[in-house]
Length: 248
Image 1: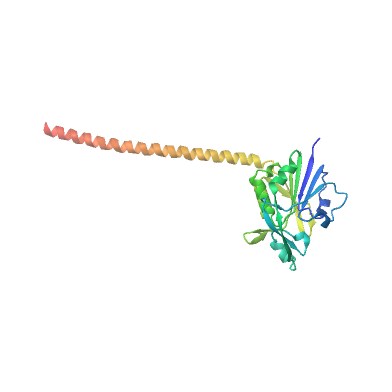
Image 2: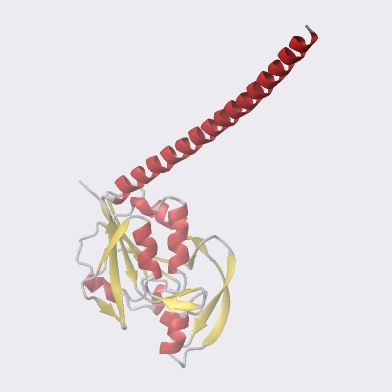
């Protein structure tokens, strides 16, 4: 019997769950707020943990805003433009949890793994950590709340899509809209890894060709040196023969 697991980072009130029709055998819901501050429906069966998810375990400053669901480690630029009254009301020290440890520990033993990523202030960085740890390839579906990400001072909603597509996923949407932003689904591209293997073989052959060309260049240089040496020797022999002929 297959085990279907859902990990939701930044679950909030779980309002978006109505968009996801899969039946999950296990669900782990994680949010920075305490469960008493959330309105998670009672019929949702899953365990809840109050955690602040980050790229590493560290003591950090969490910013609580006047709009609780937008509280985060970093204030997202697009929220400041969409919610001009957004402001930090309190800051508290938190010990963040490494995203890789959470993903690895929960998905161990799962046959189908679904990750919902709803932490707008650091979605790109979290995905980068998972990619660096080779943990993205084992996830069957990644669902991202497509909030524009800060990229070199400019907000863009394409950075997440491009990043995941470059790491072997294809994207699709079902028109699911939540608070003005779309949910984007990503599933593994079955052709990506074949292409990756071909690219690696191509690079390997190019390296061998360069090495052979380098060797051939060295042989050519040796040949030219021997050729020039032979020419000099022939000139010297001719000179000696002329001298000997003159003496006789």
